[in-house]
Length: 231
Image 1 (tube, rainbow, N blue to C red):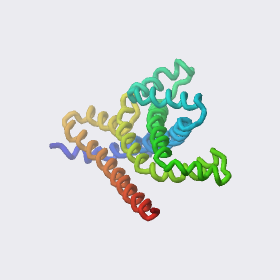
Image 2: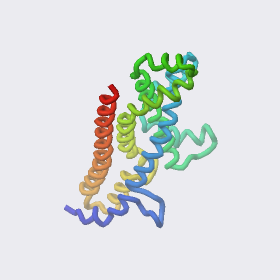
Image 3: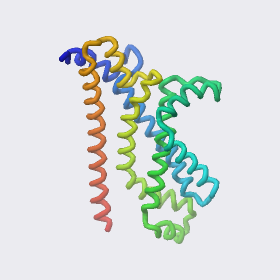
Image 4: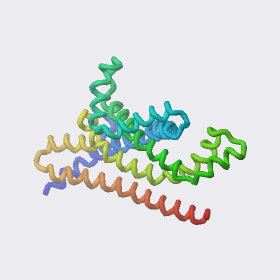
């Protein structure tokens, strides 16, 4: 087997042609995932709170967003932002930004459900106690409910980040030079070792996801001990 080809192109798999050229490889995949989960957190937090709102209109808008996006394939969203964006908005988003927007919108729908479930998992008396202390509903949500709920949501957020990290491989379809695209380019140039190249990127994906999953499990154990002490 030609593992020397993987070794000779390892730098390109890790960070593309950076610093002489654009960032690529696993570094671009991680950047997509980090920026995607950051944007999706705020988007999902907003829609998650809308689903908990007392306003029927806000709940309906949030429900439509969550159900439509969760029922739409991620690859379709990437195509929408890349190909339909210029038609609708008369502005062409570059490949990286198109994929990033698709990841934010897609993951935001799942984060919204995490937020809704996390808040609903708290004891029902929390809101009444906060309101009884003189806080408005918004203040109670901000200072009492959300800090507790978000702490319990951390493992779910990490799991969603793991899923998004793997989903970044779909960005290659519109030309984003992430890890899968970098491996495809190397394979097209070095046609004698496709098995070695794609096995190498499978290992890279596994290592990243394994570290994140281990972190999530550690956070779950930590939260379980914290809640046990709280009782």
